[in-house]
Amino acid sequence: MNKAADSSKLKPAAAEKASRSLPYLGMIFFLISEAFLFGALFWTYYYLRAQTVVWPPAGVQLDSSLAMANTVILLSSSAAIWWAGGQIRQGKAKGLAAGLTITIVLGAAFLGITGWEWTHETFRPWTDAYGSIFYLMTGFHALHVFGGVLLMLSMLARTLRGVFH
Picture (cartoon, rainbow, N blue to C red):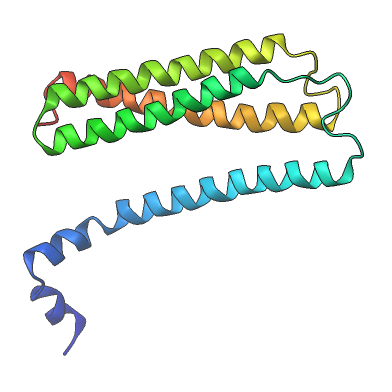
């Protein structure tokens, strides 16, 4: 039996799954590339740490309360977007809009804290290897969050226009 004959006998669910395969694969490849990017950044951090006698360098004092606040904000935003997804699956567009709004506000708060932290550190990217990897890692993470906020703003606009129901 040839493949053309086989494809004509697909069940509706299988045909729908096959038609979604390219976007699905695109998302999988995107997630893999993100994992490789952040994996490489963490590997670089640990490599630099292993090669340096004093880490972080003398005089570097990070504010752990800011890091804790940003961690709580990011975990809360994950809960908010998860809740929003559940709301739209139940047909509640207002719940989706609320969840997206909360997530956007939390993402913006994360970016604000990160920006404040960058402008108040005693070191810069050119100071030493620690400064370079710190700003590189936090910069890519902030860029990642910024992209997510833009995508959620787009989804919120579409939700408010009634596209999702």
